[in-house]
Length: 93
Image 1 (cartoon, rainbow, N blue to C red):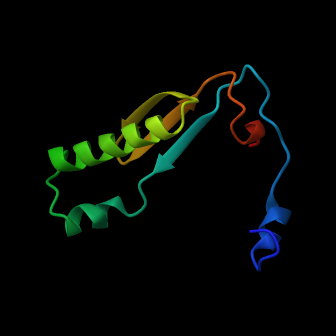
Image 2: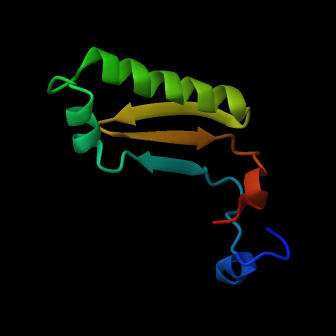
């Protein structure tokens, strides 16, 4: 991104650090999941294929980032809890 037209994005970054021992929790919300479910013919309220898809994605994230110790899903969102000692993104909010 250096020396590109997107360099201005850095001006929006905030250098506020989340101090230990506070936990880092990242919540990912499924945007427009209702339309996605309709397009793929998922059954309400909990289609097994949709649940398996979300769980498989969560496992892939856990495998990619060893600092994540726990994840959980609720409705159309997943939350990922990082180790208390994690320095992921220098613990920036």
